[in-house]
Length: 87
Image 1 (cartoon, helix red, strand yellow):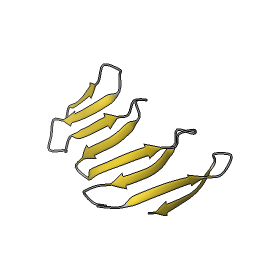
Image 2 (cartoon, rainbow, N blue to C red):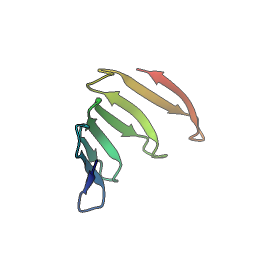
Image 3 (spheres, rainbow, N blue to C red):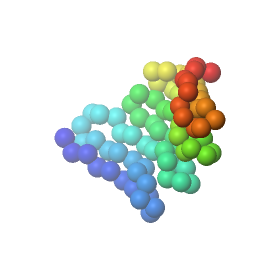
Image 4 (cartoon, helix red, strand yellow):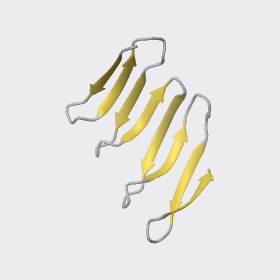
């Protein structure tokens, strides 16, 4: 199997192509180069990041195995991970 990676002019991964029947993966980066939308064989998901820590704050699954599921990651006042909940 051959895997081909495609990057945008800023060096962010935007596409992964597999030469076999494995579904391709498309990544839409945000302005900081972090994945904001990922679409592949298991569906799509959107990531929202905490404005200070840069860690994943909310992951929304739009289709695929977990449609309409939203996972909220919370932090304490020192920005340490403190919980995960389904929204």
